[in-house]
Amino acid sequence: MQAFLRMLGVTVLATSVAVMMPPLIRPAGAVITIGTDGGSTVSVGVATSTSAPGMPGSSSAPGVSGGSGQACAYQVLPAYEQAGMAPGGPTPGEWYAETCPGQQFGACSCGFVWIADSQPTQDGVPAVDPEVLARQAEQSITLPAPAIETSPAAFSVVNLPTWLWVDPSMWHPFSASASAGGVSVTATALPVSVQWQMGDGGALSCDGPGTPYNTSLPSSEQQTSCSYVYRRSSVGQPAPDGNPNHAAFDVAAAVTWRVAWSVSGGPGGGALPSLTTSSSVPVRVEEVDAVESVAS
Image (cartoon, rainbow, N blue to C red; front, side, top):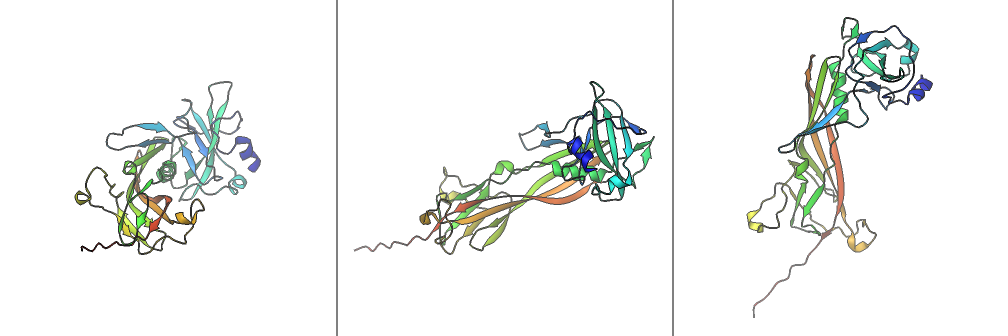
């Protein structure tokens, strides 16, 4: 089996390998390929899109192409070959080899698809497990890492609030869709909160991206929705450039994304495991001595 996978290049979209098997025919809708983790995921014509107010648009996921427009053939893999592959779905099933005719010189798109045992067949065509598609769609969502901003920007000051926020342009839903055999599934990730680790042992959670500080407005007209007060300076902490005068706390932000899926052409829908994206920046904290002025 390993030699066969190496011959196909694991994530195969098109090869000229001939597979001899009694065909199970279905209308071609997408090329189905084995996942890069050795078989635990299925890629099924995934298309990604993002949506936000004033930001419509969609694009195809890298490395994914549509079907040839001709019929594809399916054959269950022998038991000894399936033994070396991880299950491709949450319910019992089997791996099928798929062969789709190419457009030139008899080439074919060859790959594998997991078919759950509980899913019936129609007209000799293996049905598609919507939850398998949902999990693949979720894995295909490309989410941005949070761009961290603070105010004051140059350095924070002990006992004064430090404003915290991430780039608000990322705060919108991101979606990916997968379809096969007349079943179409869309997974949508929505950002809900940011967990902050402040580097001095403190932590906080903020709903939403936080409020950017507007330098064009007076401070009296602004209010933060996410801030933190340091009680000690960052003296003695590691310095990004090796200069001890630039010692800083490592501040990390992790965005939690709530994921839901919907399906057309089959049963299912609901919640999927949450996703997380994170990043970190050094934040220097200084202790500023108060200066008292006495009138004479």
